[in-house]
Image 1 (cartoon, one colour):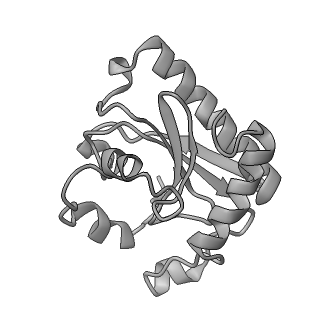
Image 2 (tube, rainbow, N blue to C red):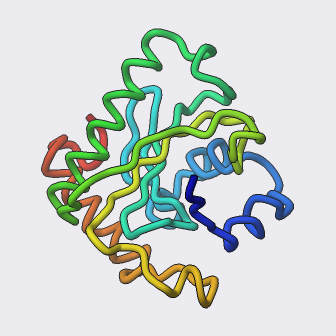
Amino acid sequence: MEHLWAPWRMSYVSADQPEGCIFCTKPAAGADEANQILHRGDLVFIMLNAFPYNSGHLLVAPFRHLAAPLELTPQESSELLYGIRLAIVSLNASLRPEGLNIGANVGRVAGAGYADHLHVHVVPRWTGDTNFMAVAAHTRVVPESLADTYRRLKQALEQVTGEGGRG
């Protein structure tokens, strides 16, 4: 069996979390661009990950504070999947990834940094997007600023939804 080592993740996973839940406080603040919230649905929102694995790493989460998929209402489940779809469409339109990783870490032992608020990662991938920097220098190279990625994805979402992020 081969192992994929990601030593830079331990400092993030083991660090003290800021006060409150980012999936509750950031949407409640109403400052979507400052908090990198790209889309607000009725029950779910999409935001950029502040600690991305790659440019365009998105998080799709329900507004309601809940920890596990089985706690979702049928409407939340449906909109969560639709939010993942919107994330994929916007990534394809703006960043043109060659592939995607989509998944949720449910529970702290599964690697969830915010175990009390369910969220799904949508990570764009390209051939050769990992390199020696992560292994040798314990550094992740993300080639675009979060602000620039936000603008590109926001524009793509607005074209898809036709409503400036609501759809």
